[in-house]
Length: 290
Image (cartoon, rainbow, N blue to C red):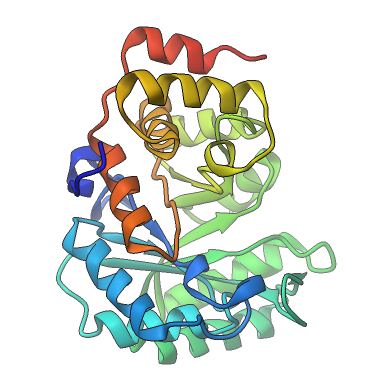
């Protein structure tokens, strides 16, 4: 399955009752420099990649002010603005970057407001469709961080609110303050620690965005998950990444995978995974826990 396909093959999901997107998105973290720091080696190549994934049916792009920092958002605007109808750009605030591969939680209300307004300028938007708290800040009450996002929503700067890197109890606490349309947590074949949170999202019609969705597919560390992925990929004439994506799509109808890459070839291969239909035997093997 190495030929280009459309992300539309994954089906669709509705965010907030109003935004319909194809259920395979693109994560724009990897279009930055090493350590998710600075500009990529080939900025024009990154722009070509962004345009290509949209050509292939991706209608949901996930980014953050901390990717670069600022680099990912700037490249998205450079490559895609004015944005085609139906394209949803979701971004995040609440992490700051002292240096390469260093991430610090910072979600005080004033920080979030400044981050959101800066993202609006970089993305050349009047309103961000989905704005996500990148991570709860242990030094700031969650209700203060989420409350500021509600005020930004009331001011017309964001349309819908999402969360990232949260526990189930944190999601439930946020829901008591405002509707939440998306949750973005680490999740893949190897790491299913968010299963209970995913089940809650299913019940509440909240989109679940698994970050590092291909963690089991491309890392060199040998595990039972990687062996199973490789075995199924071989018999299905697919890549391990395609099998990992197909498993996520089959795992839950609320799943919205956002695999990221800096390579057009890998992006095309990933998107082709939207059309891979796993057999009941495949799913039994993949769902078996070692």
